[in-house]
Amino acid sequence: MKVFSIAILLLISFSAASIAEELDVWFGTGGNNAGQPAGIWHASFNTQSGDLSESRLALELVGTGWIAWHPKLPIIYSTANVNGKPSVCSIKVADDNTLSILQTVQISNGSCFLTTDQTGSVLISAQYGGGTVISIPIDDDGLLEDSVQEIRHTGGSNVVPRRQKSPHPHYAEVSPDNQFVFVPDLGLDQLVVYKLDLENQKLVATEQPVACVKGGGPRHMKILNATKPDGPNFAFVLNELAMSMSCFELQDGGAMKLVETVPTLSEDQRSGEIFNSASEVRIHPGGKFIYSANRGHDSISVFRFEAESLELGRVQTASIHGAWPRNFNLTPDGKWLLAAGAHTNSVTVFSIDAETGKLTYQKKSAFVPGAICVSIR
Image (cartoon, rainbow, N blue to C red; front, side, top):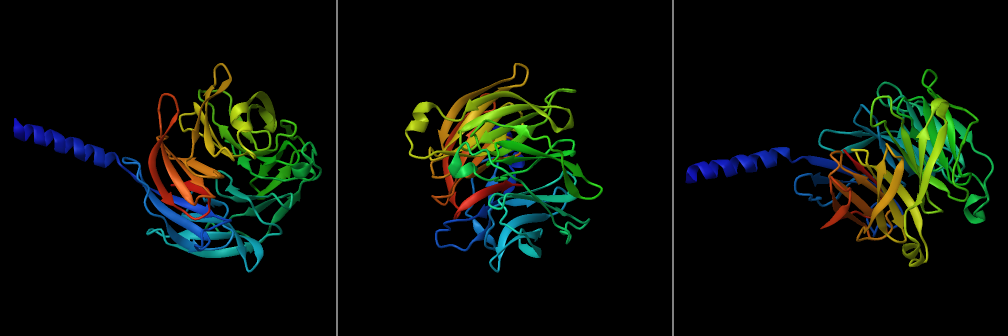
């Protein structure tokens, strides 16, 4: 009987170990790097224990505020500042996770965000300071081609004069069907909509922007794919200035219909801070929970979304146990959230309740200097 019990325990231990997975976590850094080299940092995350390893510098490079992966190839695209000039770098990721720069493409203004289309044919960049959107063709090897398309936004809502006198593209979201690109422009209070021309590997303006909350300052967004056959897709737009989340239903031709806008913090939570600013939004893999980050309050807000009743409600606000969460991310299995505190040079670990979506701090963290982008593979 004793031998049988030991065998059962060994089987259970082996099964648990076999389920565990080591994920690679990559960090883009910027600002105060605590005296450490600027660049792309790397750590490993264990999905069974929730342990985040000590981070290491994978590539020294200035201006790595955002990193994006090629959808098919082991290539990272990173914002950069090379020899004092704003640039985009394509970077090869070796099997042992060493990084090497393949090429550097100079652009007119510093990029704050990068992404590719679903096929990896076009790289799209948002330039907050320059008020422009850039597209660069990608060849079959993942390298960036020479022809750079630059589109300049014009105007400004001026509802918040200090931030909205001019256009400020902040992000780009590609539609699930790979037909459209939505660019939240904080200065215009709009989602500027582009048609994706894959044949010529460029963007085509539609002249049909989506109106956002006046003075809201749309910063980032994510699209939730339909949760049932023939069901609608939804977009969740984070308004940086208004500290709110807007839910839109996607319609034909790149149009959107506003469903609801809800605050990311309560009035009491907002009044307790001198300054607040919403930064990032993520969708849980299961589609029922939405997460957003609050700088100043230094927290993550958790929302539950009911696609049938079109209800979006905040269910929790959890401290990140750090300062200035410009970015965070979820593991692909939806069980963990990693939150980067840029001002505390920390990344903290939270478990996610499968039923409620709520976060529980695991009292685990890693030192990552100036982390402002979190990518989990």
